[in-house]
Image (tube, rainbow, N blue to C red):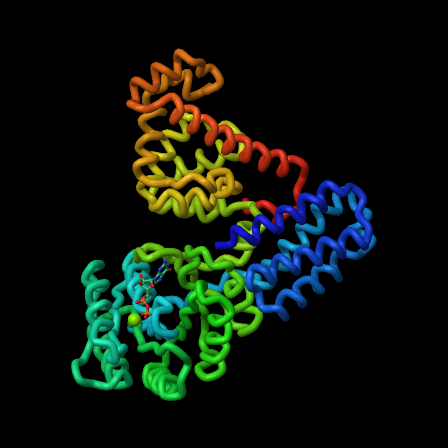
Length: 440
Ligand SMILES: Nc1nc2c(ncn2[C@@H]2O[C@H](COP(=O)(O)OP(=O)(O)O)[C@@H](O)[C@H]2O)c(=O)[nH]1
Ligand SMILES: [Mg+2]
């Protein structure tokens, strides 16, 4: 989602790093470009203006300009300001600690409410809690069914009362839950195409009848600044407790995600990153900032790995990446593990720089199978040290794996790019990047 912004900022920072000595003018020019990049990413103009002002105040001190690496310092300041812009600390969801805890989900039509209800239910289940989803969107018959199908797919109880008003359905659901040992009630409310008074009244009533522990607004990141305005209107009326950014996996410019916290003052609690029910992550301002500044999101990757892979292996992977010892043997092992975790392109995007190195490569299962076949046709020695792959070895591997020499060359090229990127990352680290710059 933040590719274009990342690319722009990378260019600005490259210039800054290369400048050696910095003057106020250098800095001001760079920050003007940062502001332009933010605006192009569809960041709210006031947010962009204040952001740059705040960075500027911190960056134009003697201390920064005379430091050994002023460029790095300024990047660090931008990073820290981005973290602040996104809310500073990660804000956890209200704990599921009574019977029942109530999460109310609201937002415009199509923003991803029903999907989120399913995702939250799945997450609760994984924590050994008993969730129940409540169909309170009665205006579209398909909506009740949609929630039912989702609930059935994860064996979660589904609550609905035919012919009743949403307010009643929700109130009854909470009563039912407290009698039936349900830990978490998730209210899937109705949406509209635009904010309207009637809907707001309905939501206000549901709120006062059910007294939710979380009142979540689902904001569709794909709709840009509209999402920000909608969030503001919902917050004004309902006093929401948290925003969930949905469709962060899309290719919109990301400005909504970057503006919404600042404009509404409401914390972003979760990020929805795909259509599958497992595609829900806690929102971490620092990780997203690192990702936007091209530093990847190793922590999310490792955490995701830990869910599926055993801890020891995940730890080993992190170490190998850090020490630039990542070879085809590791690649093979990791690929096999990683395939259990989810769509590859989304995982690769979390590796610093990998998204970029592999940008024009469509990663799909067929490609992966081909890559794996090629690596499996290599000897251990070749996997450890691909440099020894000469023409005749390549021909052998090509024949063995049923691929062309060209496919093998392509894989080698991609792998070399990845190694180079890991190396750069490590060198940057060794140069003593300020603390907080690297995501680990
Ligand atoms: N790519 C992507 N699609 C999503 C995400 N969340 C929801 N969707 C899709 O968006 C559409 C609308 O979602 P739905 O939950 O029905 O929205 P609702 O009208 O607010 O209940 C559906 O096609 C979902 O599969 C997400 O995080 N990423
Ligand atoms: Mg819905």
